[in-house]
Image 1 (tube, rainbow, N blue to C red):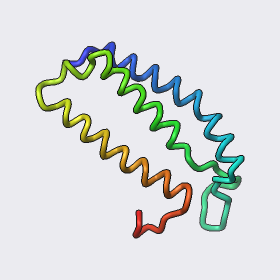
Image 2: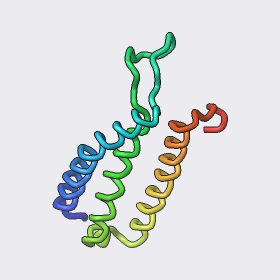
Image 3: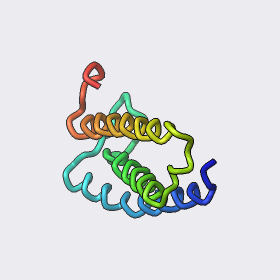
Image 4: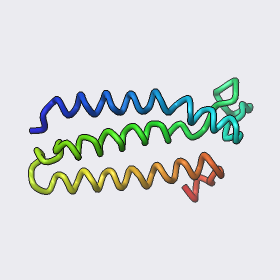
Length: 111
């Protein structure tokens, strides 16, 4: 069983990274006009910044790598660690699709 201390470390690290990178990502998205403008078929009434997933992914991945480097994944039963990395790889692929969609507006079929 994984120590609950690792969960606390992961949460705190992820939260700090997300809260500190959101203003940076937001400023860059506004500067380079990666925003979603209001329209008749959209819910938001003001421009919304795209690319917010970058902050979330950075926080999640860095927290995971920190826990891994501290030996947090060593407590898993044999084989489970590779499953964790398979989920991370799959999630990273979806992250790349999301960022690409934010940058160039992919069609639903392409996504």
